[in-house]
Length: 479
Image 1 (cartoon, helix red, strand yellow):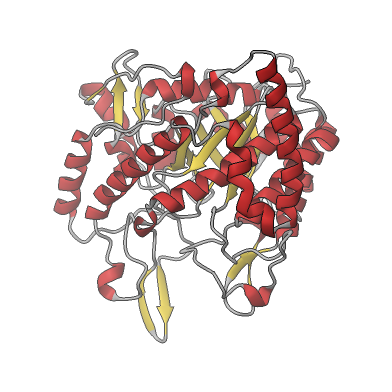
Image 2: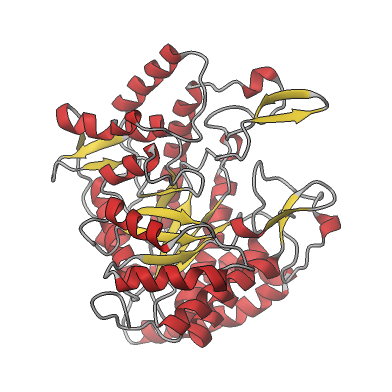
């Protein structure tokens, strides 16, 4: 069954994607002539080709019209009229495609979105790291334990987590498992977002168990009561908009495995343009953003909204070249810069990038990823992050935009709806000695539900006290 995330009463009718042939087919595979970083080394090329052929025949997971709709929403973010909330797992797992886990993740994002929308008084564009985030770039190609060296775990879409020779062999059949897991996830997300679960009037129901045990939950309960009062007032006035009953929710992931992404690239029957129908939005990571590399080439051919991660080594000249390659038409909503500098570098490295990009006339969305630049290894060997460092990077991001008169467009975080112990700190403080209790991530540490809501409250405060009201922007991007 073709799955999609319907986007409430303004949803577009599904357009039909047609197979790519001729010039379009050559365009979606043009990346093959360039160096492609972080790609698996499959032992059987024929098996990979057979899997790609199957994927090329599969129905789209999302539709081109939905991607266009998200691009319009991201244009509002870029112009300073909205805020992006993007979050989800570091790496999804095939054995975590359950109703409970997907619901908890969605519930956390919806709670965060409600906090941000009400407290910051701007529309919040909600995008999940979901239904495709099964692959992870790694710093080393191999891993050694007790004198045994094996290929590193690259995510369930490539190989297995178990440290055995059989598990760690890249298997192209996993690409088809990723497709089917993504389809199941999207189908369930659609049911939740359009079936009444996301109704704003259910905000107390979402929050009951959280309120009982968490100081952050008690704070959220006060805000929830205010939301209820506002809703009751509107209801008394006879206003009952459909937008309160459903929610727009989009899917995104890192476009890492180019065989998978290009196999799911289709020609839009309306426009003849190429869309990657594996997700509404894809991004290029810090390790694969080489200007002369395959990932940038692939992203330049598709019409989806595209993000690119910018680390502390990024120069303003590189940022401008990314704009030339990925947004030559200077279309607001097309390109998002997701900056991941680290709390100790954000205030020094970001201003020049924002200044020079803004001066160029490009209108991009600026988003902070406060997770990846703040990772360290605890004495126990667990990879973790300090919640205070995450907050400090977010605060620095807002401070830079406040000083420059530009719009802090959103946050991009790794989170889960489960009560894991992977990041230290937060309202229900987790200590380094607690990490082992529920350390469940296969790759990077995630914020749990309590920490995620703490972050939403503080971002709302930063937005109103540091960034101020959403500014009206003049052409060229300045306020």
